[in-house]
Length: 221
Image (tube, rainbow, N blue to C red):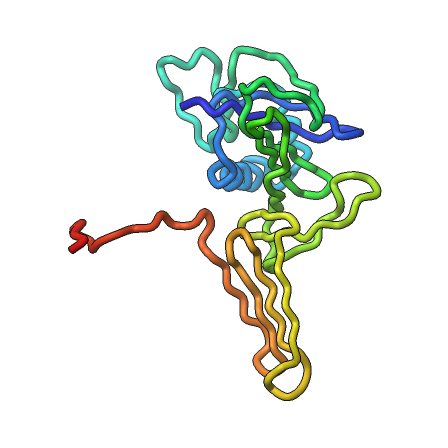
């Protein structure tokens, strides 16, 4: 099924320059793929990756594309399957959408970040998540504001949630210092600290596993 998606870079005043991916994917699929392309194809050179993605429109992205009999355009090794339409799209995050697009991924080469936007049912772009191309070991990281003069963001490195963090701090039962618990309200990943045992980090699976019922044979009774 087609998932029309934009891939590009931000411009000034909330604008962007992007190319179309005819068969895009949701973040849980496309973000890991873009990270692999960034590492395997471009050796972590974000500027080179952005330039290559903006060089043409795409049918789909792939690290190891293989020729198919219906492909009319030469494959691009390490990137994917190009499309024939060569129109560059320039738009605004405040634009009205026509219902055709579903996702937009904007690379920030100077920050090594990927910001994902989702098209809402009201035909507007809504920031969905922020992802570091090189995920750090810390569960939560502070990222610069997207807009000049804005406040910094706290980003969950598991699911990419922005400012969806719950923090609790209470006097420690150890009798000194404080116990803290910081958790992501989207995926449930958390880090807890206390003065006696230090930090305990829990990374929850993302995307979450589908619930299952019954045993391995399919029986529920």
